[in-house]
Amino acid sequence: MKNTAFLLSGLLCLSACLPNKSEPETKQEAFRPQYHFTPQTAWMNDPNGLVFYEGEYHLFYQHYPDSTVWGPMHWGHAVSPNLIHWEHLPIALYPDSLGYIFSGSVVVDWKNSSGFGSDSQPPLVAIYTYHDAVGERAGRNDYQTQGIAYSLDKGRTWTKYKNNPVLANPGIIDFRDPKVAWNEKSKQWVMALAVKDHIEFYGSADLKQWNKLSEFGKSIGAHGGVWECPDLFALVDESGNTRWILLVSINPGGPQGGSATQYFVGDFDGKSFMPQDTLTRWIDYGADNYAGVTWSDIPQTDGRRLFIGWMSNWQYANVVPTQAWRSATTLPREIMLIKKDPVYELKFKPASEIKSIIKDAKNFSGKGPLERPVALIEFDAGAQDFTLTLSNESERVIVSLHNQEFSIDRTSSGIVNFNADFPAIHRMDVGSVEVRNIKVYLDVASLEIFVNDGERVMTEIVFPERPYNKVNLESLRPEFTIASIASIWKP
Image (spheres, rainbow, N blue to C red):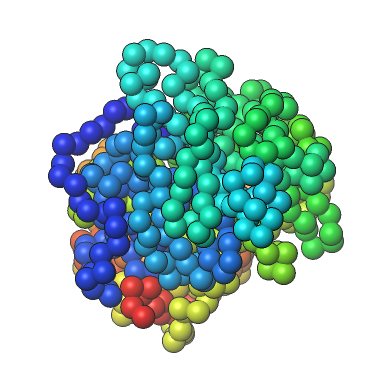
């Protein structure tokens, strides 16, 4: 998502452009997450260009290095060998005469269809949206176009294509966020593009010349706001059945009123997407998981579809009470296809790599201490109502299930007065899901709650002025465990 207002803050540059080699190994600023990805400094929103190549997970992201509020977008860049520990790299893509660098994707052009590399050195190709702020201010309706760039050194440096843009705007204000993947059935690259209130699919043989294939969504799904950040991919269930998944973010219009991401399950024939039904389904029923997309080029030997989202909401993203930086990502999550007769749904669970920093689980009944501000809290609800309270001396966040309604109450969770929409009770109807296992991943300023290993998920950010140090579980089964989660800022 992009804040389409031109929000230059006038603040001095915060020097996020290059990694700071003298930076301490442990980040201790107020509200700095200890096991979620954050920019070193300044503003971050959508994850972009997720790709795996030669042992590295690449995470590009919407970034404004000169302020902690949204401004002229760049692509920030980090890499990781394990989805947990990240190395910050220099900014990958800067604005130019064609505009800011909005969201997009990166692919490995294995067969060098673009001609940017060679058979022995396939290029990484970034496909992104140009946002021409000058054209926007002039009242034009064609100020968003699609451009490409390539890298021959594992994403460390990028060359923009001399004939950009590769996809011109037909006269639609919202025309952005290209997510590209090779489609074996139609033997071409397929781009899913967000176009105001629907998705358009384009095809290309070389990533340079694009032809429109089809449209989807004008009369289906949630339409409370602009559609953004699509992602199209196939998943296989435990029985070997294949279905196609289309993720679409929307702002506003989510289940909690602001930003959120819906998904559709169906079939894709290489040109058109056909949904299994007309129901609106959400990847996350909390307030703070938006614009998430998946990694391309995960090796077949791995086989997972891995996702990460922006852990914030456009209702208040520019004013949350952090100082040197703004925003974090969610935990990386694996997406799984499950059959719920007669339809299919998705499950989202934390990527297995998170287990490497979880340790020292201790058992408690009813009450227990939180010795550190980061932890995994787990219990079996036994399909019964419960109330879980995390608190300090004066602040608390309450997670509960009552009469098939799951809720998170952050009205007294800490600092809440920076925006009227923030102090709220967010609710989720669990419907046909029999709530059993609950896992709460607590970081310094966030909770990610997974019901039944991801059948339902709620993600919420919080800003306690002092770390929560107490856990209280009221339930017919009050037994729970607390495990420590190590900081990724330490070696």
